[in-house]
Image (cartoon, rainbow, N blue to C red; front, side, top):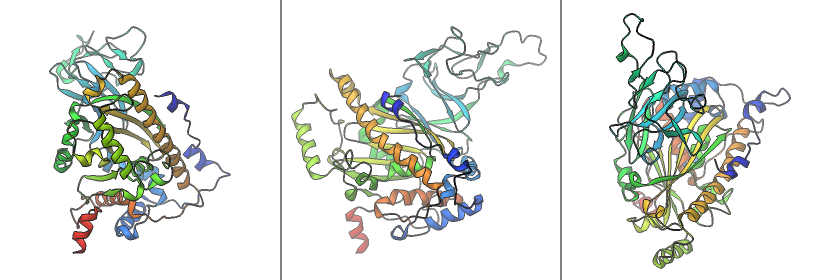
Length: 455
């Protein structure tokens, strides 16, 4: 975590606020069915009449439990990028929706997502710090306990040993256990897929293949060569707000003219942002540079002087060089593309009012070869941290608002179309379908598409 992130402390603890007897929480408790009804009613409105969701959708323990069982565990969750584990034995540890996981590159170069729970006595085989000092073959990376390199996995409790593919290699003193078969004990594998270099896991094993429905998005991103990029920044944040608050904040750019008025608004004015037509599995938005920024970027690219900024990614179209792109793959994959970098957020929902977040930046290998890359890396880190700190403050304050007696349903701007589309996704899943399955897809906001619709 960056030093700046370490300095940021949330000013609000949602549960503490809600439970103080001297504080009043005006929202009447709602059942899961009532919250679902409120979401469906809001999502059924046209964008011109769109409203926010019930506050209880962001505060209810019961509704969060429904989300776990019906949105999050059945969905595809992104847990890493292949550049984080380039060699056999490289691994990432994380806890996702209550599951302690290892993401590892095995000896055959495949990438596996395995449970960290030992099949012997349920010990976490990779506890923080990798067990007691000097025990086991795992080596941490950069002093972090959540990533490193190992030859095999060794449970620190009873020294059961596992291969990188999860198969049991050795289990001392088990020779007197009748009918014990070593092949029956292994680290549980979870279903996983690699998509454009990103590693996804489906915890309950029921999701359709990840690439289904993402063909247009993959084509849109092809020029970025995401599978070739390198993850160079990863910052961890403890977020005292609901996971949906973060998704909604990430995808809409209306707030550029508010909290980002000094950081993003001067480059990408809110009024110029627009969202593509509704799709079954993802949302796509465009954040064009204003004319003066676009012209300055062309001059910067033509100069070939990259002493103070990352060079443009090779092979991008003129449009891709003149805007940021925002993508949401339902439910939690958040990606932002810029002409010189890609930003990915890893979400780990912990409860109705708690989220672990890792903000990352990926760059082209060519950029890493620049002699001044360390300087550019520091600048990029500062830029990412600056606007994310602004988002942390507003998201925290939004969560507090859900508990307040002054809360009331709001109206959405046309610039918040991504939020409305996300609500339509939630409503579709409540109906056990996907967006566009049982209704007409919402039209694109692109000026040309609007004109064609009117004709």
